[in-house]
Image (cartoon, rainbow, N blue to C red; front, side):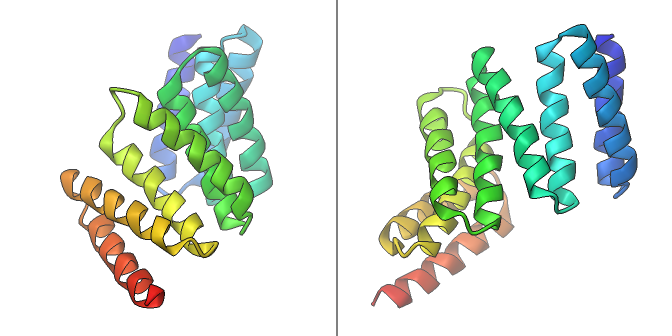
Length: 181
């Protein structure tokens, strides 16, 4: 059963890379079915987050949020803070996309708190969370906070050799700095 779900998850990842969302969705629905029938939360949670990403790709934010919320509950119950933070950050991103800034802030703050407290936090995950939070702060007029978040994100992107993230951070700091004067 575990092998079958892992194969379905791998196929779905490849289908997403190949821009075959329908195939990815079909594989993930089967992975969900198998995981639910087996009552295996450790397999169910990643299937939920993967399907949530497909729903985001297809511009179905309400469906994506439901899937991410269920996965977050599972990660919380399993005491898996890094996956919880990653999932929570995606929930913030969805609310950000929907201009629901207050809800986005709640999720970004939670993800950021988890990442800052965990000794094994991947730098790129922290950078991506800071990016989302900086966007939220900028959209709500908290320019100084946004600038600080962008600067930190830029440093982390540089440490991860993510040039696009570095450039975006620098550009956003410059825009916010000139608007703050």
